[in-house]
Amino acid sequence: MNQQEEIARGERFEFGANWKRFLGSLDTGRIAAAEASLQGRLGRADLAGVRFLDVGSGSGLFSLAARRLGAQVHSFDYDPESVACTRALRDRFHPGDPQWVVEPGSVLDEAYLQALGQWDVVYSWGVLHHTGDQWRAMANVASQVAPSGKLFIALYNDQGWGSRVWARTKQAYCAAPAVLKPLIVAAAMVRLWGPTTVRDVLRGRPGATWRRYEQDSQRGMSPWRDVVDWVGGYPFEVSRPEQVFDFYRDRGFRLEQLKTCGGGHGCNEFVFVRE
Image (cartoon, rainbow, N blue to C red):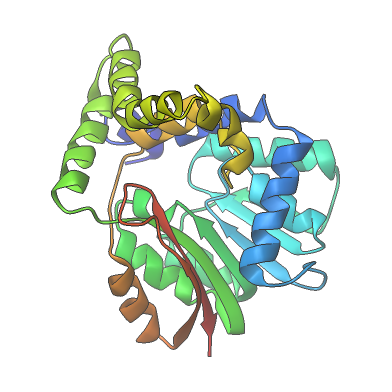
């Protein structure tokens, strides 16, 4: 079954369509924030001479950031519209650049990955938990990291019963008729943003978090687009930080950085080094 069939059956979210809308609001501030995120997590001011593999490139923003920092970049995504988004960014900022390859591909396709070889940095933010086979995807990206190379991934945190509820919400959204989807997102917006909105009002700064969200968010998405991505993001799997740590330790990786979401519903970020 291909992606379009999965979407038609209500089994997969149209990630690329959401990214396409996001690109319309991309600006230099968001690009700079993406660059700063890579610099901070990878611990270096530039990526000159670094081979950077973007697994599930989405909008292409972090591929662009890596290229602007000097890396040789290879971007791939399972979603055709995400591939188109990444190509659009490349053609806009680096037209005809032989050091930035963009193509369709799946992290679950071992033959495809083997042909790519190993890379100095393998980056996959918020992708592996949407493949439908997270742990297999996690094993596959491990094999792409060169000795002494880095693996930078972000995975949804396991909240126990809360994650089960969100999984059912996401599944319901993907299977719902188009006319009902905005209602599901609106209900989720109340749940996700209600407490923050009330807190801002009580602190005498109504709307402050909303206005700063795009600046503070490493992905640079608007609050609405991020909620759509969160509500619709299916397939959906979760993991606990200690599970991820053990998984990669057993495969010869050392944890270099960890940023948790504090037990909430966001992503835990990991930077591992292959020893």
